Image 1 (cartoon, rainbow over the protein chains, first blue to last red):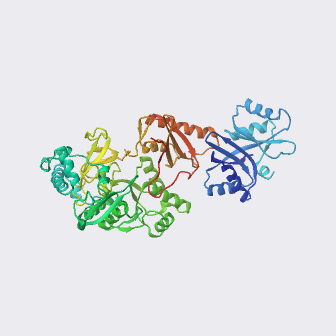
Image 2: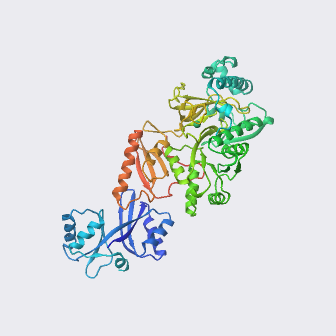
Image 3: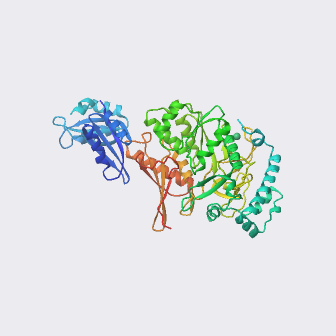
Length: 143
Length: 433
Ligand SMILES: [Zn+2]
């Protein structure tokens, strides 16, 4: 029930982000979700794409430093307090969220949030035991 | 293995007797033939006959790089051009190059020293030497070339550049000894990897690397990535070119100086006082067998240390430590002396980091600032900002602890720091002083 995410090191230079999206576009790779974390001098671009293997390869060929991480996609009820409910479950079980961001598409009536955990297996267990819907990779890439 | 057993393992007393005789001859030679030396000796009131022991070397005046420039191009030659068979020149960072000349016997001497060098580094006549030092005015290429032929090895005079072709030749010819600058060795390995060729599968057993400062960590990286033994070599054209000193493959611990041809001293660069063995300072060389272009107490600007203990390879000649940097390269940042090689050692302590870095010095108001750019590769990359920031802070802390200078470490994208096929551009000084 894990999802592959690729991450890319970017210097804070004008146009670098557009270069990444340009390369992926030319290679027919579809970006499903994107989040940029940046500091004053560098940024880390996190992407979920429909073909992470190919994305990693073409970006590496263009000289980017690319990493791969497993993350978790969680369905969140699209109503006030929906996200809070999930964070509360994680907090009560002592699970640390490294970072999170929203997925572009909805899953039916629900929003989808991407979570990065330190202890991913434990996090998935806890979420599922508490009745939270975790979306697997294949389903997510195709959404 | 030792090429010239007699001279490289000579008892100290016998060696010093030879050194004195040769020094006396050289002093007479320069005094009588080069107006510059006559003037300098007369100025300090020292006569040719005053050199009656090796200690008297200290009474002779120093020779500086500027003196060579002032006598550009041939003013320091002791022989008429008829007797000069080769001219080399070193590129100066500013203005005219430094020009050096060789008689036929100088070329023989140099070839012998390079044969000794190659053998100390593990080469024998059965080896094939891939010589990727630049051929031309620079002494590296031809110096190794003549030494390899003198040794009787097979030399591939490939020179620097066209790295893909170098990889092809390595694949097809199977050379066993690699000679080039250390940064070029890593570049070849990198290009080989991009071409899908595993450098470790080649026949190479050893490499002799020099002509730029490098570090122990860089040695480890070269040895791991190239699967060879990596030896450090030292030389400069003003003395003879490569072949002044080299590490032995047996110990890889300090570079043996061929003292039957060169007398080394270590001095304090500010006071010019001679320092004892074991104390770091600036290397000074006097050549005692050169004909066309001898130098007396030449200030190399290279910072090193001498140690006299015999080596387990059997050589009795003195060793010098890896060059810590050049006083020319020495950056003075907020009053602190900083050598790029020191920063490199700190950077390379972090697992996975490659030696691609650049120091940028600038001035904000009256304060010097030092920015250290380090490339991020897959091994040190993380998808979490805090991990990368922690690495930056850790490097800054280590630099501060080791060098007592504050630096800002900045991670940059791979290959964004300029690669060079010869010497690496390590420092950009933006200060206007
Ligand atoms: Zn030795």
